Image (cartoon, rainbow, N blue to C red; front, side):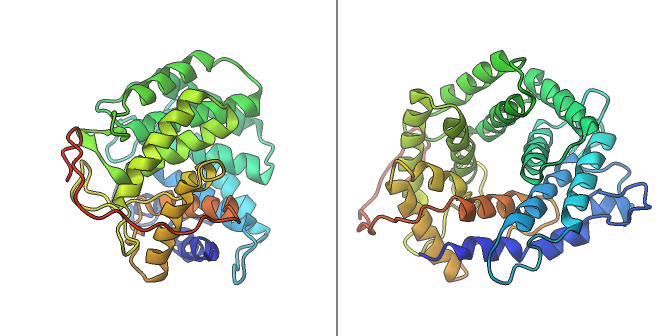
Length: 335
């Protein structure tokens, strides 16, 4: 199976991401990835989610794959640091940020962007005390913030942020919050294996929760996380279609999302997880993957694909024949 498909699909998004970035070092919005704010000026506040795009750039800089023009380009770390600094400067005093509405203080945008910033800071070996203070403030806000609605992927993102930042800052100040958030994620898993996303099961964001939990398990092994991942992966296998496409408009959030990184991590000890990615790669090769490149969430899949490329397991299991017939998930209400 050609792992470079993940990298090529992701690298193809980098030029678009760069058009969203204010790269003018003299601009007051230098480092902002919300082009509607800094360039078109059709909104009067920047979306904090947009600063997540630092991670695709940092990973592209670190991905040695043929025909990657961004590999080791010296200007990219400068743009990444500028992006993190803009996230810091545009945040509310409590460390939170907005996404779609002014003064929204969006948990998802704060978590996605913080994870991206921490990962980028570590990957590029940055050294900036201002950024570290910002990380701590945003993490503290996330540790105490409770959003409306049940979004397991957001909770898993928050746990991963706190885990990574605790390691970076060598602190135990969020230990209690990590335990509480993790308990929440695990309690939101159905006996059928899916995690709550608003009103039910969404296989798309389910794969992001798998990705986060797999990374948390890698950092801090816990048998309960492993058991949850086994159930989650077994559930996900039912939603990879014979042609390699995934998900669709029959779930709680109507998504076609697929985040492959977690399956590579779980696949290190559960080979069936790798079969899911191998099936998806067939669909990817046949141009069956959906287009994610709108200005708002283009970053999600780009960084996850690059991480899947980086952690790709070399030894793959043989394909299995698919079960035929119908399967009814009564809790998810999906046939």
